[in-house]
Amino acid sequence: MDSETNWIVLAHLLRPQGRKGELLAELYTDFPERFDADCRVFLAKEGFTGSAAEARAATVTGYWLPVGKNHGRVVLKLSGVDSINDAELLDGLEVLVPRDERVPLEEEDANYISDLIGCTVYDAGEAVGVIEDVQFATTPDGLRRLEETAPMLVLSSTSGEELLVPFAKDFLVKIDAEARRVEMILPVGLLDVNR
Image 1: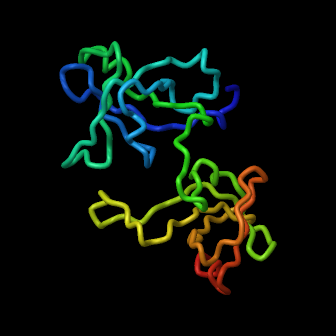
Image 2: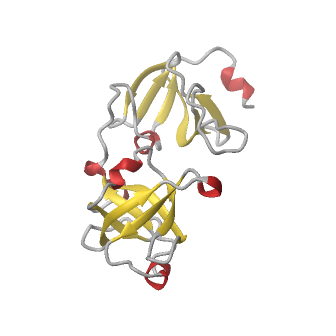
Image 3: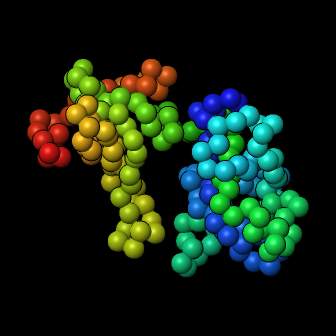
C-alpha cells in the first residue's frame, strides 16, 4: 500500500454520536453491511497515501444507519473507543480499507466510482475529458438516490471546461479501468448543451 490508489474511503468520521464512543460518519460506500461486527478497517487523515503500517488499524464492533436528519450516514462503534472523549480524538479521520478488500460487485457491468475517477472519456474515439466526479440524482430533500436516473459524469474537458455527461448504458461502449479509458457514443449535440 504505497499509493493513494491502494486505499478506498468507506466513511468520514464527523463527531461522537452517543455516550459510549459511537461515531457519526458520512457514508461513502453503497455497502454499509460490510461494517458487520469485527470488520477490520484503518483510520487516517484525509488524503492519506501511506502504508498500512502508517495507518491506525481499528475494528468495527457494530454499526447502525440512523434515521431523521442523519439519514444516509452511518454510526460506527469501534473497539477500544468507549467514551465521548475517545471518540472526539477521531473526529475528521477517514475510515479506509485496502483496495483489494472492496466488496465484490454482483452485477457484471457495475463499476466502482473510484475506478472511474481519472479515466478519460472518448466520444466515438475522440477524447472529451477526464472524469473528476460522478453525481447521482436525489429526491428534492437529498435523502434518497433516484435509482432510475442515470448518474452524471463530471468531466474536465480537454479545453478545461466542466462537462456533464449522462453515464447511461445506451451511450456506453466499453470501460477499461486499467487503461483509464471510457468509450462512449454520445448523441449529437449533447456536448454543446454544456457550453
